[in-house]
Image (cartoon, rainbow, N blue to C red; front, side, top):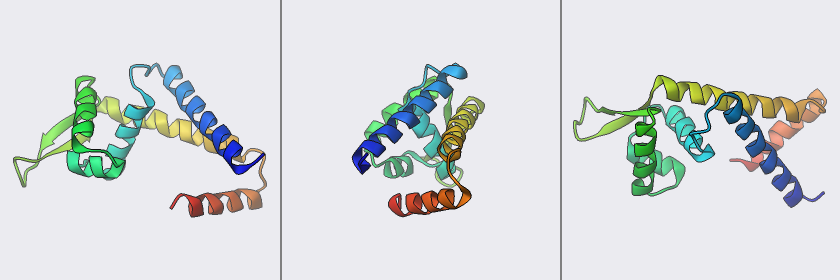
Length: 135
């Protein structure tokens, strides 16, 4: 198989594992895209909307609409900044934290699945190559 076929297969497997995790934990009300927002909010450590939009490579209005939906579903809350009352930071709710834990579990399963047929040397080589291509 060539690289394009391998990437397509890997992409399908990742989506399938994340979908399976969503169904297992009954989080069908969230899209994979919304799960990505939650993961990014956590990784940025309570960003404001501008920081989140920048990290996602999207416009602020697009991100604002998506975040409002996550607030309605009680996954995210806005907290006014102490330093600047005009600014607000995004915090995950407990429900949002749980979603991230499930998402992390899907990633762990994918890593386990990918590495089960590899020797330790092959796994180190794969990890090293993936680091190079994802910078």
